[in-house]
Image 1 (tube, rainbow, N blue to C red):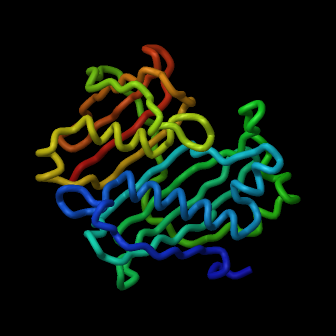
Image 2: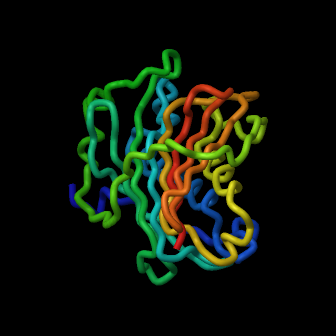
Amino acid sequence: MVNGNKVGTYQFIAEPFHVDFTGRLTMGVLGNHLLNCAGFHADERGFGIATLNENHYTWVLSRLAIELDDMPRAYQKFSVQTWVENVYRLFTDRNFAILDAEGNPIGYARSVWAMISMETRKPADLLTLHGGSITGYVCDKECPIDRPGRIKVSEGETAGEHQARYSDIDLNGHVNSIKYIEHILDLFPMEMFRERSVRRFEMAYVAESYYGDRLTFCREQKSENEYDIEVKKNGTEVVVRSKVIFN
């Protein structure tokens, strides 16, 4: 199978209600598009959520790194490409390219996924899914950004709190992975986004949180433009770690 058959390409328009006050697509909406494209690509190849749910399995996002040179503006057309880079027993690496209307790359993303049992919440063996057919979609297309790195908050300050509500909860019954992105970016003042843009955004999902959980956001500034964030639920358990780097 040639690489062209392994890469999925999906078209979008930056709707005016999907952009922020600068007229650029929000990181949360872009993240949703990336996850939707992952779902489209997997479903078209027989290992999507609907197929897995029939056997009581589902995909969960473990790591995500997005790096951008630009962001689509309101009403602009753009596309997202996605492909599988590696498949391991418990995880798979999936990459993305964000292309402008002319097909030029304006950003890339890397992600790591696990397949878990919906009954036990434990990881399942990817190499047994459909006889390991997922490995046939591994693609050597370039993704020229760094893999997600290790994030550690050691001397951070409490920058915000949020109690998980109805709008935070997704199909799997836990706080949606994209909602964390939105809540983390809300920790920064409006002026930051007026003067700068996010160049790189990383997420590491450690544990699940649920309706009613109290989320505490601890932020540590690593350099002039770089911040690490740790999210705990109910004051104890770490659920997410993130890195935000501004231009």
